[in-house]
Image 1: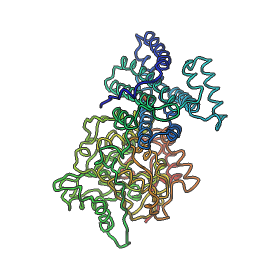
Image 2 (image 1 turned 120 degrees about the vertical axis):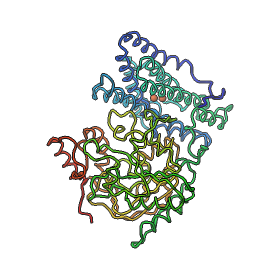
Image 3 (image 1 turned 60 degrees about the vertical axis):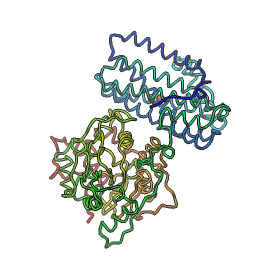
Image 4 (image 1 turned 180 degrees about the vertical axis):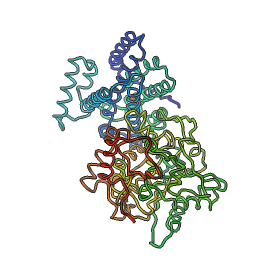
Length: 619
Ligand SMILES: [Fe+2]
Ligand SMILES: [Fe+2]
């Protein structure tokens, strides 16, 4: 990656500020280096704790809405504003990734740090981040109380020497955007220094590679803030001797991820396609699945992707299935069969249906992809079943962390298709194409809990970056699990017979969410795609076609609102790594592994009843 940046954009950053702030950090690090020279594990732990707190500070301080308001106020051309937005969003996503990785090192290291200490440091970091954001961005006239509280805390930090004097000075006044960027040049440098020292003391090769990558991220952040600080004046305009195009070129030279999808040249990929068209089916009760689905595929010219002899891989959605008496959270074999026949009709020779194991195989037997496929009736001479978890080959992801392999079948297929099932989801609104992309790299159950190195959404984005689907279909054929937890199962599913399809995965999911009557920006994974790739995730109100009104939105009831608010933290921290929160499994097909104590069985049962994650009386 080129990082050549024009000379005009690198001047005028306050060198004294960098030296003063980094001088303090260098002093502390040198002291630790000496003190713990013969105890590298202790030093590494201290450095990771420092990194965790510091990363959490910037995650909060760089928060999207706080900083974007300032970007919106800049007096710069629209195209430059879009690139600045994307640059800052990308830096923010990097910092979120760094938090996860630092926390995993502390939770999984040779001498694990207690969870309470980890969260204590994260909390201090989040609080400091709030102080920093408020001090730098809050308008004292509009929000005097917040500004006063932040200033008081900064003053207290300076007096108790918790915050270096120069940094306290910078934090104690409202910053211009240029000043904010200049300050971050110094803070990013100080972060890189910490990782540099860590690199000296990490012995594990995988961990070392991750630290090197994080350090390189921090250097890129520093360069980006430097470009911005040098290009703008204190009134938020471009300096006279700098052109907008020059700044765009400089930011793009640091990383192509700084460019929004609309100006990236990689337009063949579904994530970046300018064409946002989505087709929906129309269905008459007498219509067979082909008669409903194929016109949608034709409309999106699916056939043009498939030349004779091409291989097709379809990412299906059946591994969250738990019982034949509730098919609302699994894709339909009939639909997969229809897609495969369509592909073969247009020349595909080798078709694979790929899925990945979930956490359920830790607690129940017979949960391999082949066994679950057979249980739900996914078997046909027209396609083969592939287990993504045993099909992994080493790959190099250009962005992201930790994940180092990907399914060979997925990566090497001529045409990649994702067929998701419409199901409610507390944090993603609905579990659609983006969510269904889980499992093509690392196993999803390693990407959820406190010791994860990255989260599952980051893993999906890395997959989309390296090997995105060429085509995506949302299957709402037959029963669909609605409500907040439809993804896990649904006692009273809704009956729909509908499909959506598109070559643009983000546009497809945005459309379906809008048709459900919700805002696509409410889905965390949609926002993640926007921040990673700069794609448009809004829904065009003119194209919305509301879905059958019997579909229950996830927040339709007070209970639904409660579930949406608490589901993710509960699952992450209170589910005993998922053991307490499983649907009512068909134990005749999937018997429990080992013995389960009465406490676990009781909590499971209570959750199954409370959240309706068990088969109901649907015909
Ligand atoms: Fe970072
Ligand atoms: Fe950074």
